[in-house]
Length: 183
Image (spheres, rainbow, N blue to C red):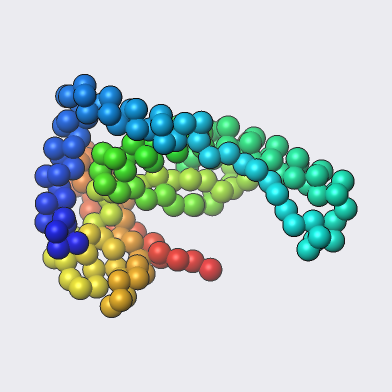
């Protein structure tokens, strides 16, 4: 934290400028995304049928049904809270954002929709939104929007409800405090 937090804003600005204006940087990130993510993470349902006291046929049927349901969710826009990307597009977005900004956060909000069987969504949070409330200075227990125990274990993430770069549109400065770990 002491090495990077003070320089984080200008580093992100420079990185974004390079990606927008330098074809070599754009190509390097694009190539990295293609080689690392490729087709993306896919579902392979493999359950312990013996532990669940299922026959081989029952386990196979359950695995096929589960994979089919997951693929239906993953290939639809309903997996994204903003309904703009499917699961595979989000994987590329997350890596691209990590390479550009150094971090990215993904929340798993639950939002039931009329046209969707499942309420689990993915919400990508750009790193700039995770910051100390009201730009408070960093301390031993709160730095870069991450509240930690004395041993460094994250407790909470302080997420600004609007992007700092959108200040010209909205002067709203509110934060949501999200637990790092949930039950």
